[in-house]
Length: 315
Image (cartoon, rainbow, N blue to C red):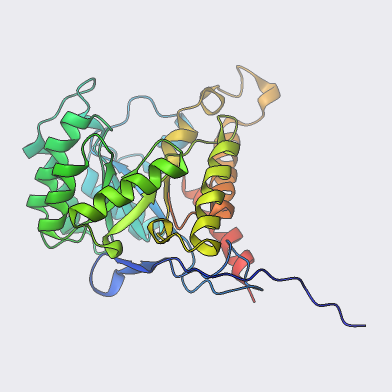
């Protein structure tokens, strides 16, 4: 007797969004079923991975994370090109770390000029990420939107405390927004409604649920992202039918577990392998929860994640 695999009936679909311009533009979204449930629906666009680049040399990275980028960390343009040419990056995420008032407090014009140089030098979609300081991000990201007009950037994080001015600039200069909320389905929906009321089109909007890595609450992140997908695909909640972006690299590599040298605590195993596996496993957990875009750091972690995506989407 033949076995019929039970299948869910879906009533919704994740909206498709095209990011970037030209031959290297990418499209995310379009799913009609839960993540990688190819036996139930369509996954027209596999999840994408953005490699992160800092606008200033990192001073607190683990040695294992620094090694693949030796020689370019003092030049964001060279760093971005290395990610693309050597590691096959599909997207770049420029982290404007230097604009943090508690760091270098770099001015908005200076930061925007760096963003423009990177945008001009690469042909893949560019994400520009602030520091989640509302006052400074409002100043910096608005200037980035203006100076990079026509580059079709992804601007984030855009939060409830700063969305009005940043979103207005993004609309005016035709950029996409990453709407960030503190891991709560209701807050995510509320911010999407506010941005929609302001005039942000659905095809210019991504959900950033604000995630964490393994050992630091990823199970709660998974649960919230899962609920977002359930609401989008089975409850016809149009305000949640948007692709999800997860900035996971920082959350993984800032933990104490990846920074402890091998000789300091041999029981933890090889430090480089430890960090790579923690990032890759965190990334895979978020993909299974519904992530469409991951921001990642180490090339080997990205390689492992790509291999798993390929395996899960093989027919």
